[in-house]
Image (cartoon, rainbow, N blue to C red; front, side, top):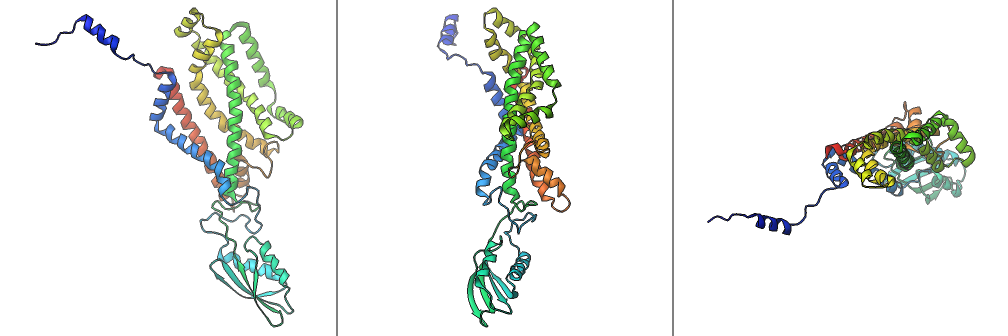
Length: 382
């Protein structure tokens, strides 16, 4: 005999079952973002680059402003410096400063045994020239002969790794590239955050309120558009000095103008939607509507523009640094390193290649992340 479900049993079963939980916009967006392989891989790569830029300069073994006079523009290689063809000329230069000649030299492991001769007794204190070199450490006398005119010394070789080579001043390019990433990423994120905060709030408020308030707020945007940007930056340098943090806070305070127009256009269409009108009918405050309905639904274009604004600010920083208004030596950024590498591209291509790889890789990751977030946050695709 088959069981027949009555309306009472069905109602009882529905009453005892657990309530169905809805998915929020953020939970749904997170799920779709994780499914986007390109965006997810870009997030991983960008996170790795950020961690490398933060931790890398601490473990490379070089300071970002440390100068190696004996390693000016040496090419990138995995093997440690000095190479065998560098040791001989360096010993000859030191011997000439000691007014001696090199009779023989032999490298065993990390130790150089050199025999020096001179027409008169050699002053042992002159061996300090080895220690002052970037290639050697403190020399020790092993044997003296011919009344001091012949001197045998063991000189430890100082090994250095320059995986990205060195620049025109003899500074480790790997350390400077990672340190430059700190500056470039910090400037991009700092200015973009300021631009997003001001632009979204300004544009959403103007678009939702409309009328005279909208006209007044957008005319203020037009007035700021008419101001020469370089003149504005020069005024900031005059008043605040060459403080790149304050300067790029101000850069973000100028770059919000485009964001305000984008958000205003989105808000004009969003405020006519049924869910916004329903919220108004229920008595939700203007701030509540902006916070819960208008601004979240403008995040798609905002995120896409944000991913374009970060590289724009990084390139803008390069231009200002070239004019002497941005990052100053010995600090550096990816833009500054690329500008230096372009000047030395004929004989030192590595000075341009490695900073360019970091910059272009970061820009590609930002673009893929922006596309993924745009698709994930688009409410029409839910």
